[in-house]
Length: 500
Image 1 (spheres, rainbow, N blue to C red):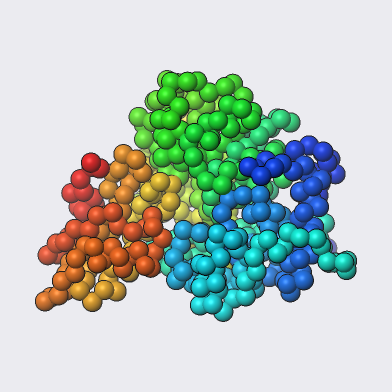
Image 2 (cartoon, rainbow, N blue to C red):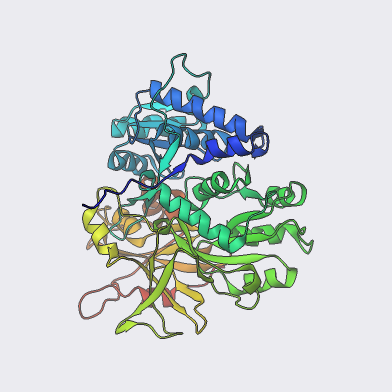
């Protein structure tokens, strides 16, 4: 008789750090700092308040808030309660927010004061009750909440993070505690850990890149400094004065940091600048190398719980431009047309490992299409060199990465084509010095109808996040297609001008 396997658990990460290092600083913000003991107590209080709001273990709770300590309190409170976090991008339109509330089946929407107006409108449209974040931060209820978990099942979902889909509708990637655990372990084995590590969180915490900083902090015991928004001067000042050792950025952020700093070197306490968000311009990497900035390129997706491959510190100059080798729990292979690609041969990047999410919420067909034979089919193009180092050539053929934000053309095209004067629309990314890429739309007017670029821009702005709105709209009599009728975006990209 075969014994049934018990689920794999770990002690709850925050409570363990509070037990091991109660008086060490865990969190620093512009409004104060908190020790592990204090953060643990706040998490318990938030969990009790959420329970008073009727939230139960495994229910989904959406969070619409800007970066700050309150965001982090809510994250740990949801973990303490055993509820599932659904972080929402505060740059989305009300229509987009309402869709994600409905799709995630959120039991409650928690919001900060800045997001109050958008929250009320989106929550009303979705039929989701809402509560101010401040209401969860008062004194706990007098009664004892008896179902608080003090351990974490690694197969349980911690969060649902929405990532854009080629169909034009975002889909929720279900990230488990095990995904976070192995992501943190792989990162720690690659970068090492130090008792005095300080991680600066200036990425949006609603993104997987920001959220995983909080999880790594709780797992490894590193302090986090959180910035409300990215400001190059503030980031540089924190690195200089607050002993920041680790920071995660995308290319446009790093470029702005260097522009603000000039030729002043960074202090030796900064041991790693993790650079993600798509392939980095070689000119930027060479500038960092000349200044001695410890930049390590990384490759990852929401579906891999952030990092899948990261360049090791000792290879940062020898393999300039590479995203490194897979982190230890991860495997990466390149699939070419005839099977596994040869070294140097481009193909689709496939990933597997315990950091890969189990699938998409309520999307069995898309899950089956993306996760096949044990591998995540990323759709990204890259190659492995003779030594097994990954080089990423492009982030999905159609994907636009503008300032580190992902924009899928199909989503923007759907909005443009909803206008009665638009027969067809194609959206591409054009090179841009500041943002990496900017969104450009090519529109074919409907017969006998016309619409100005300003009118179409206003339509997009009313329905989409600002970073998805085309910066340029061109008109054409037709769109280039192949014999099968498939749109040839590469021809449109070839005609796209460089940024002025």
